[in-house]
Image (cartoon, rainbow, N blue to C red; front, side):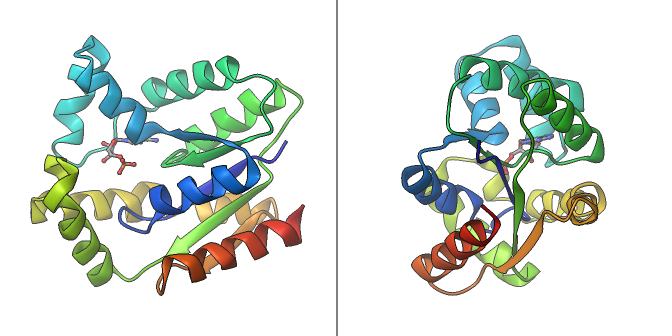
Length: 191
Ligand code: AMP
């Protein structure tokens, strides 16, 4: 299996690049943000609980997203692999993911970490907010909170995967196709 953690702060381009990567490598895209927004749209209890946190730019509890990922991995047994987008976001999530995959005799192949300066992230998120319909993309305080959450709780995962020799850092600025080319190059070096 080819299991990729596509990593980076909000606005780094994970969603955009995931779309291209799943097409090229025939992988399943698992975005916890998308799954949570689906739960909100469906009006589920889980969605309603998550919404109050997401609207503030705060991470939802680990056990909620771990449970969602567990069922999606099980539902896609037999796939060629997964792109994890926006997951894991904490060390506890990364540990849980390692355990879930090893239970399937599999593992994370690599982390692709997109790096983008903060000013550019804010600019991109505000631009996306014009038509994403996401309230967390339009309010500057919430955007800053999301970036703080990333810096405090999520960025340490680079060290986690580096210790497993799986970290690949990619500059996430420039044309979409150029960045896609760099991601593909990194994938082909590792597999
Ligand atoms: P995203 O679409 O990845 O930017 O996620 C939007 C929001 O959903 C985040 O600000 C969090 O509140 C929540 N969220 C998404 N993925 C996770 C995760 N892996 N762990 C905790 N919260 C998450």
